[in-house]
Image (tube, rainbow, N blue to C red; front, side):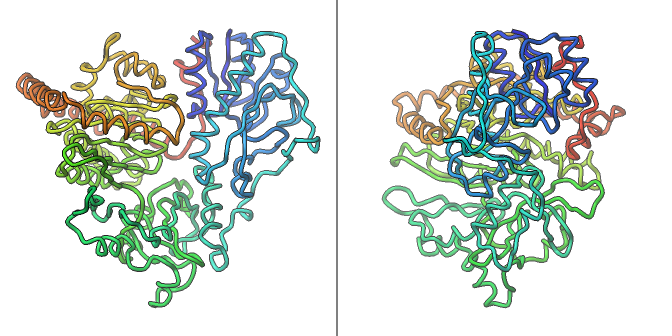
Length: 609
């Protein structure tokens, strides 16, 4: 069929649907929801069968929905109506939630239902739920709805609120008053629930250092007070303590590791007893995040958007308030880079997690990650798994931090150099096998970071955007000119960069970019990765494989040193950053400020030729 995607942006759900529809042989085009006249023109040009709207902020014009079946993806259970469905579900502590695909009519979210799907609502941010459970449920429901439309026999159901078995109800747009944190009364769980329900957009309006801000990226610190027989790694300055191997002997006394991990006193009442102030007080810092007391513990706040600035955008707290954060005492605890080890002596597996917010990696974060990789490579492991984060593996350089720099061009150069340093530490790790495990999506330099590993294992449904051109025609680095030709099995390597469209794990496997696709179940992915990594570490041919890897790296280096690949890539990047063409700087500014689209790119709007 001919399917027109109508959406506010080419977000993760829209990308996933694009890939799924393409796999099934549908003819696709996309239009950004810019104005009614633009939508009407797109429909006239493309003459679609159904119109699928995965992500909208306003109603489809009557001139369109009265003549075409328009399938709306609503992130709520059957009967739910209103623009803040997922926000309210998190705030209300719902245990079960869902996605409904309904037909557009005059009343928003009230049309007949074509399909729906439900899922358990785990304790997580709205953004994480949207990228995972909501996306999976939406894909299943949309595909079912489209199949029903294509068959031509299905009659969509009317769902009446208040009918037996219908839990959904109409709720208004959520206002900041409903999100407001009462630091004097709210416990840690309440604070987290409010922050998580607003994460991504719009954040919770509050104050930091006497300045109005929107808060994002919250993590409980009170959990660190719980006894942990196998302590997590420490994070200060990028360093960490690996947990003791089986049989004991980590080199650090267990009691000392636990004391250092707890930070001695993370709970608000402990700090208050030392003159630190009561709930709501900003207590300490760790890297770019600050620790804030609650009534029964504390939470880390990693990012904020200043509300006092006309063009404010989301930044790490330490970047938004450098002097104030620098004056705070530094402790460990913000959950960003962690490490663990598994397996018997002689066949150990190290797993390095780097859960950077939204997958963006600033210069400082790259430096900490490289330091962690160096320390992990000093451990007696045979396999090192690079696990990224649960929502993103990596999305490359940190555009928001670059935008905030005194010289965005200089900071761009520093950031890409630091990314290259991370990549180099993996490419030159020739004494063991490295594995990139993609739990979540990867884009731009983050995708090419994954390709520096010996093997890439991805969760089914994960999306990769292995290209740079959408950000002002960036050339890209991360040693892609070395790794990409050695991976691509079909077509020209350059075509991967030029196509500017997402590919999923299965397509990436066909191309050679991904070596293994593991089942889609989110909770089962990392256990499956660990099982495979342990089997790899104990494989009888592992020593031979490592020897072959060393020989190949030596031959490649003799033919053309990695330093030459890097120098050639960075020479092209320097033109992007400092040259006469300002398209990268313009695109970056639009991206960080979430500037609405004024037109749809032609590689998506295929109806416009």
